[in-house]
Image 1: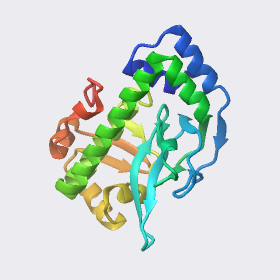
Image 2: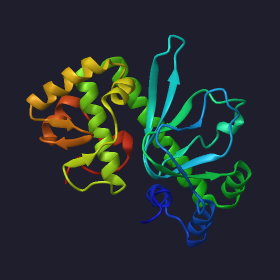
Image 3: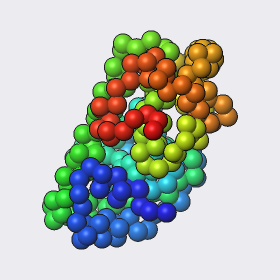
Image 4: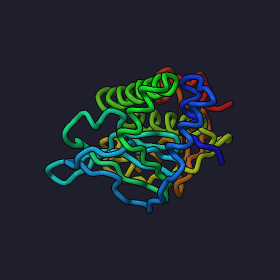
Length: 240
């Protein structure tokens, strides 16, 4: 298995052999993390840059009333909080969803690498801009899309992101997200999400069953979502 972090950065910007070697060395000693473990919590002092080599995680905030809002899903190849050390404390938490391998790049080592390796710096900045575009798409969903559009849009996004990094080449994706996690990312209750999923299944657009996503009719799902992949900057179709 290759290093999906390096592969992702190479898609953002060409990397020289020396830059690949530097990234390989920086991520050479990942640690295994169990599911449902916080990598860092809101209020903690920022530490190293976390790199997801394998497994899924998510960003989240806990509101004063105890409810949770999920802010982003992290897949293999994603890194967390490139510049968070400029702030005094974390304003959100990050938790694993599945068993994961996480590399931790020391802040000084990351700063030195960004200073010395312009190709790495440019690739990381582009990756961060794509993450910000994804965040804007989520804000748009929460503010303007209907419940069905919101669910369909998220499924299109997750499928396309997973396909880009080689997690699937088929219409089916192993999606390790409970309905509660999905609901908390969409500002919905699990009960309401279940109703929406049944409606999407009845339309023949998609089926989500036992953490497996099947895209039954890609065109219909895209149409329901009003999905435009431009914000992911992948130049790929939802299904080949």
